[in-house]
Amino acid sequence: MATTIKVSEELRDRINRDAQEHGVTAAGLIERLLDAHERRQRMEAFGRAFRSADTGYWDEFHAWDVTLDDGSIDE
Image 1: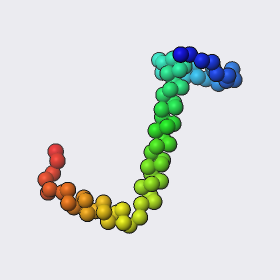
Image 2: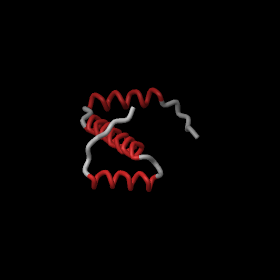
Image 3: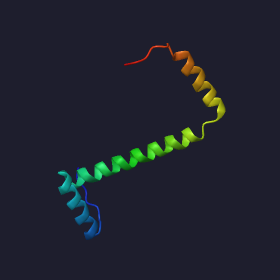
Image 4: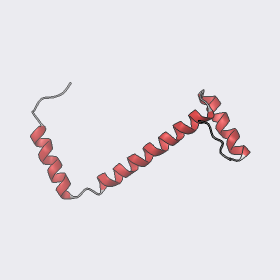
């Protein structure tokens, strides 16, 4: 299903130019950009959660890391 969105002529031209340069449709370019934006948001949220992990988390992480280590080296 197609729909129309209102954008400035300048933005329309930028979208069309970049889409052509990348060999995709305007919709394809917008989808790629939105996918990348959403991925960045997920990664930033993961980073915030990772940085805010308390010592209890790291103690458990270390315990599981040692428990699961069978001493072999994966190649």
